Length: 225
Ligand code: IPE
Ligand code: IPE
Ligand code: MG
Image (cartoon, rainbow, N blue to C red):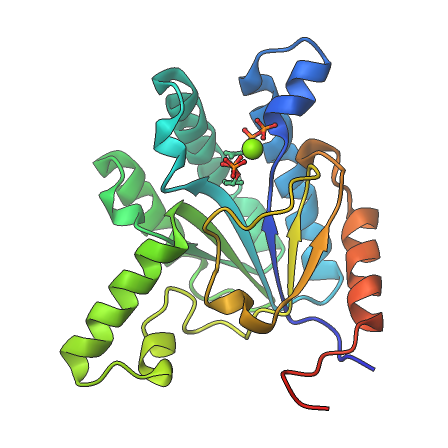
């Protein structure tokens, strides 16, 4: 039997379709998506996960209309600011992965502050992937490994944005799409994959529990017998 999951990652997809179904603007879907994030972060802690990584903005999402990008950045800022107390109450340590230092200076400063304020928290690490692309991460990691001496699997792994996190156990994608969209390509080498048709704003703690229950029934072999 598989051991319980320590690290779960989620491709939070389907906000736009959730809004469209309700004849609402896409930003309404993103707002509902933030509510789902709040609920799921709390549930992940209660379910004993050590780490939760959430794909919030990809390095390819810049292709979206300027207005949507700015709505997403605004929501991100508000989420981090308004939830700092909640992180403290739930013992959540914030981490940000991806090329987030290239974001606007006010966002970078706010993230730096949030990282510092939550750095002593221990129960769950919440890694938010912001301006994240796995290929970009791998290029950065391989360059750092080369600069440090040799490009080996161990050296690349040690320079990934997730280097200090437990190995990825389970990768979930909502909204019925069955692709990785440049998320955690290295880390998913032996992760279990779980796809659900639920749109992200509708994804509830019971859905996370269902994914974890299925994970517990999977047999992981890592190439062995
Ligand atoms: C996921 O929802 C949120 C982000 C990518 C930021 P989408 O905005 O991709 O929603 P759909 O896929 O259009 O429904
Ligand atoms: C992946 O979703 C990125 C995030 C969830 C942040 P997308 O909606 O951007 O992915 P594609 O375009 O459908 O592959
Ligand atoms: Mg999408």
